[in-house]
Image (cartoon, rainbow, N blue to C red; front, side):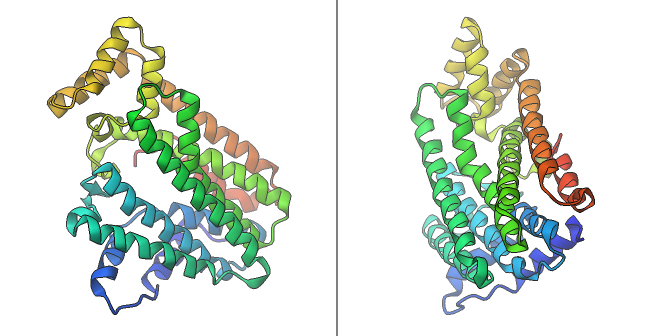
Length: 324
């Protein structure tokens, strides 16, 4: 069995060894850059862990798993443009370091590089893997569209918000689990259980991201503190706060998020004060931990020896109270 560090190393090596059309260096340099600034490689590592549950031979899964990381980073490049973000992992975002047109085009080519990785899936499960990936890829785009729509929506319910992050974030993590399991030779029942396990972990991961934007250590998190508040972005914290605030608090919060010319530091400070009054941090942590607990329960039902689940269990546990 491989541990987390060994799997991440395999993915990092595969990324370094990706082949590119070097005819246009300006196209490829941003691609190399986004990979060079690091990342947890969470999705490919999850895929390889899922594969390793059912098979000691994971070589066939390494390149398809790398395709998941390429696709994920493609979405980040485009998301940063849409969100007008300046930092990614404490480095300049691609559109800031180059320009928007370059970032769009370099992001586009990453989608096709990802497809090239998936085409190296073993023939016996290629169609099944492509169906899982393509479904997830479309759902990610739907989730991003909902996120954009929510920017102009006066009210977003908790249910609507959770559905949006399920599509935008959780389904790709779920697909990573399922793709790895399929390549490892899992039965349909087990690959479906792992999909649901990944979906729950993905929901927890994004909810924690919302939390870390305000309460995380920015030196570790790699983003500007309170950036979501400054941008008036709908997050779980804001959605929940608007839902449970009393009349005065609700009015204060609505005024703060509808004003664009407030000093950013003052705005963040006042919104966080309201969140603290409403105990939003604890509510958010409890919701995320509930999803992690459901994921662990689903993993227990997968029909492999418990000793083989050790790394996935450790990974799930590591998400509790994460700081980055």
